[in-house]
Figure 1 (tube, rainbow, N blue to C red):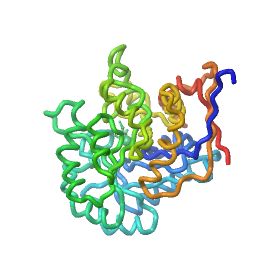
Figure 2: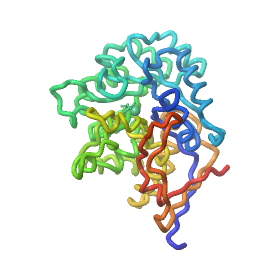
Figure 3: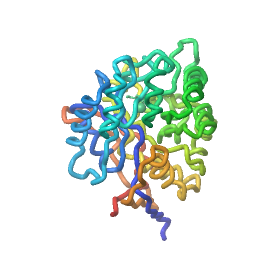
Length: 354
Ligand code: NCD
Ligand code: ZN
């Protein structure tokens, strides 16, 4: 076999992605549309996507930008931004019409384009109860914005203060802890059957020493910030385990180099081009390739009550790492965006098979 590994899996989903708008959308949408069946689209545009009409229009722009090589089954799943603007009747109508999939809560100021977010998740109790009744999932950026809380503890504190009360008081509400970065995130998912957790390629493969130890690397800066080695190892163990509550969400979040290499570095990692490759390489290293399909293709769909894919993808790991994957791309206007994961892409290739 010359050390070549080849596996076939059901087509993967990305349960958390930022595609932006305009020129950036045009540049990044094809990567997601070529690789993933479902893509759960985050609503943190400026202004945020807070109505069904805005979500429908954004979905149309995404489909128009998906490009000629988009998967035939590529489906953008739209989330509304949960803040004071959100009208519950509109959310319900949007969900009923199949336009709106879920609602995303951002604590104001926690991350990129979250200025319009809420102060506390508990303020939205009425909307959350309605969502629970209608089976609309709540997607949560679980990070405290309390300046007195250390940046590496903010996921745990948010979960304790804002998430656990909601989960316990509204147990019918389906909840996702997005981009889990710590054991606190893993634990709240494990402790509650109605709670799922998305896990990113970068939280699976990097720790804060990668970010900070050998010259600070702005391309690895995201929210929630990549945490300790122990947290990373626990996250990788969860993703490769048989626990059906953990699934793949890239949190691919492109920013132009001018924002990533700046006095105040923008939070967000653009990983869509090689997201599958990065995860495949990690699972390969961990001897867990037999768990890859469950993590990237099955568990998210199961959590959200959707059919599993019928189409398949073949992944091939080459014996040599002599490929030359691009390490950045440019928008039509010339803005450069760094791409995460080129090392894994030197090894892995994939193709869609029917
Ligand atoms: C995201 C972005 O850039 O939109 N950034 C990030 O660091 N993950 C927002 C988010 O998901 O927090
Ligand atoms: Zn995100």
